[in-house]
Length: 131
Image 1 (tube, rainbow, N blue to C red):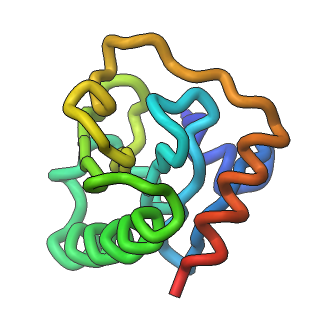
Image 2 (image 1 turned 180 degrees about the vertical axis):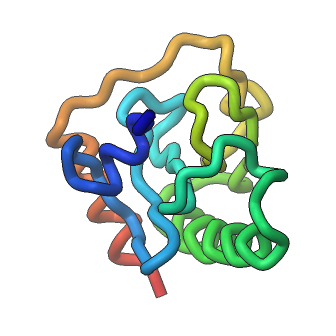
């Protein structure tokens, strides 16, 4: 069954895309923990990250690294936090979260609900830093 991420990849559901290759996609979480919270996914639907083939895993992590570098340039923060939880959507995904304090990556706290305009502006800021 197609996940919400597969529907984003196919264009059935709109997304605030940050970066895209033939194999991977990075887009804003529409209910972020903090401004600039990005999700990085393989386009191939694989439920569990450690079920990826070794080469796919390496490529996904390198893609996430390139997005994280651009994200840090665009959103003022001390670090980019990385979380791989994999319980909420059965499609491999990496959370990239701008961090200024430990609580910024606390998934139990209430999520933000930015407007479409705010999401679009954030996406534009990050895309401007993609190399």
